[in-house]
Image 1: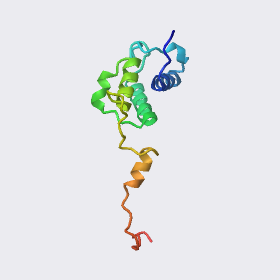
Image 2 (image 1 turned 90 degrees about the horizontal axis):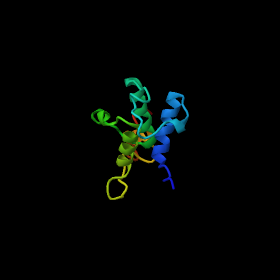
Image 3 (image 1 turned 90 degrees about the vertical axis):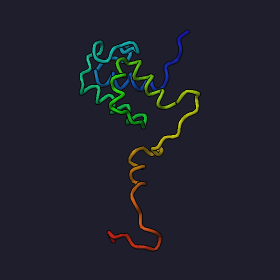
Image 4 (image 1 turned 30 degrees about the vertical axis):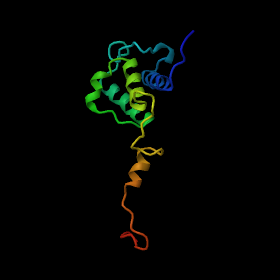
Length: 118
């Protein structure tokens, strides 16, 4: 009996398959991102950007060294989404994503005051 793949694993493998123009079934968790899949530095940066965007997380540059295999990337993202103990951690970014959070950070004039733009 095979264990169903997580949503994170499916999305990471799909992003790699699109980037590499390969069939998703040929990308496995044990594959080394550089040696087996042939990703260069730019490819890795783009993959990280796609993961940040898809999962609404920030991946610090210091963490990139730990992402050697497809499985490492999957485990990393899953760990950022669900900490040990299974309780999902609240995100600093709103459900609408980074743009919504950025808009909500803009200072708005107090009620009854006119905006300097009007």
